[in-house]
Image (cartoon, rainbow, N blue to C red; front, side, top):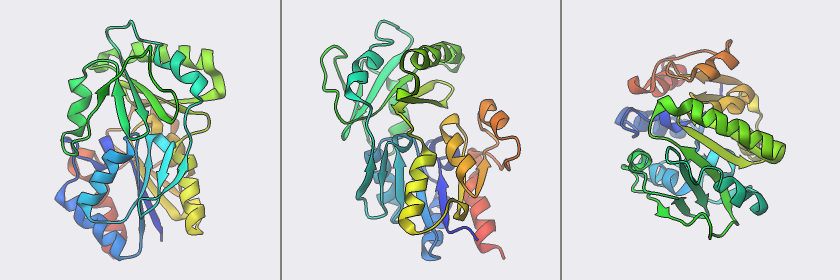
Length: 270
């Protein structure tokens, strides 16, 4: 029996309205009462996820910024890896003159963006976490968990693919790069991933990755789904992720609460 459950949020545990359903809350609370550890594993900011955790009234680990920050079940920061400050400015200025792309930073407790982005803000309407505008030519470069680039149109995915190639050519293995959605490209420090963060959690618990069942839908979930004892893909997963993990079980869609239904059947329908 698995002793740890790790789940991505957007496109996985959250519904189409980017919120946790009442059924999801019931199942996760029941898991904790059963002694099963739970970890949110997301590209979102830790302040954003902490609000969700408080609303759920459960203690849960938090893997945030795709593994750049890890908090334990009491909310204590147990791991942090920021982007090298020397790399922050050249990365943040990669698309500064591109009208199709928005540049975001997670610095400390702040979410910074180079121009108004109501599209991205809509993902956070239930947690009230919001951004501040920043000047890409004059800002502090320390404590940057991640830099990410978004567009408002999924059809611009190829535009971000070109950016991904440029980033990898220029910075190589000094950074980690992954798509969380087709219109969101994320940049973290080298060797940062949800999988490496999950490894730190199970070691802290005195467990093994084989004790984990994980759920995800995006390429930023690849390492976590590959490393867990069982990695389940959403029906709505990206085609790239489905192609990379052809032998992993594919469950239902996030709009149908597939993850909590799967967990309920796995742990309680005996």
